[in-house]
Image (cartoon, helix red, strand yellow):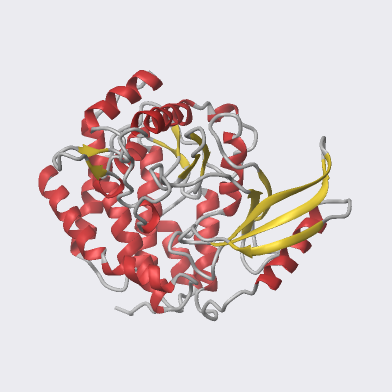
Length: 399
């Protein structure tokens, strides 16, 4: 039996994986592109000047009138992507000559979350007017104008947490003061309901998304995506991961209503303005897809993205409210039911996905020097065994 060198994958092996794990067309394109480029050079720092020049080239292809880019600077946040803030002076349609702050969000050489900028662009466009999102303007889906695929969208005003509150990695364990919980929590639930009830079938912009029918098609597409990732990226065979995938394939719950799934809906991925405590923008749509609302909810209600109340006993979803209150508020706002059995399935799936990203992809991109966030990615790979232990515990409960 030949040993596969995953750092230099052959065309034949890549094609074998594509056949074994059929994914959505755009996801297949992105993953295949990643694998064909893997043997290339590691990530090398990209200067602001290079990003500005690439952005200017993109905009010359999109804007016919003259424009000017000024005040470019690096923007923090977005753990898996490079981000640049800048100001654009241009003749905006329907507005006239104006200057506005914008953000460029670009892939590194290889990301801990290899996703599609085209899908991110399209889902943000689809959500405009549904929930608060930054306006999406342009996309370089294949890295034709910039070093890597990128999206340009409006700069969103706000903060991810109250001023003066402890800093944590990517919104993990953010403390929400009691006086803010009902104010932000009600918006958190209301926006969730709107996303899951959005009629994506009537949208004309979501061309990069497959449209699964009710049943298990959407579930299988997700399982194929992440099992393929594991096969592409993992440095070692882990029987627990194979057991988890085997159980999930044998227990796929049918989807009663196919919804837009944000994929990372949690505290830390929205901004709010402190003067009026209004959620101003939902961010990080890169994992969005069509599927079961319970997948989103299992992620949102995980222990990672909440905090304990002052009594030290009550877990608060997102730092806002106890689980039973969250489920009740969601059902009231959405008119949709919450099935605890299906949540159990997606608890396993989401933990499998986290282990996959941390132990498989995270470890590989860090060791291969493929990302600008090498310290953070290495830290994530270091916590993978805690995630694996959680997966073991979950499987013991259901098998």
